[in-house]
Length: 267
Image (cartoon, rainbow, N blue to C red; front, side, top):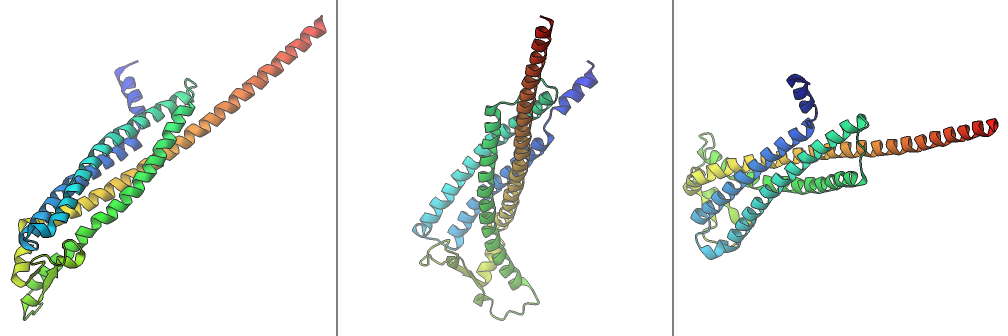
């Protein structure tokens, strides 16, 4: 076998659908976890500097943000391992299907159970990331409201006579308690906050993190379709093999009975 034929054979065993889903999954998780972690840090810094200057007022929020950052570490580690496992399962299934077609291999109950387990687990993860995707859109909405308020203040067509009457009160979102000081920003102070690097960076990072969560959700849906198709094919192959085995036994039994009849006729 030449080098070209060997390369074609190797490329034919690559599960391209699983490979694309793995690339999407790794990219989405990297964007969500990396950008989300930095955005949370910037949000806490902005709140401490402008909305809640007393540490005890946002102590609970600090704990929540730190917990979410640890959860992000866990999500990144889990999906790195899970993506590799699903890619390996794709290689296994592709190889099994090819050997099945060449009558060199028969699928086992264990292999089908593993595929079915991955289908169930990927379905649960897909539902979980659907919730994460919706949750990640909340800070984008909050920052967008704040950004549009600042843009309206700076617009020459707004014709605002009293800029100090325009305020953003983050206490109404439940982020910090109502007794937090100052809790809100108005007028020029609000404009200065919108000009800080923490606001600008966190706003755009939340957008990218939300897009990363959506990409991961698409990857999980892709995985789910691949695993379901693989399980269905392995199941149908198993039924076909069982039918072929039964048919072979019946043919052997009929052939044995005909031979016995011929032998008895000669005797």
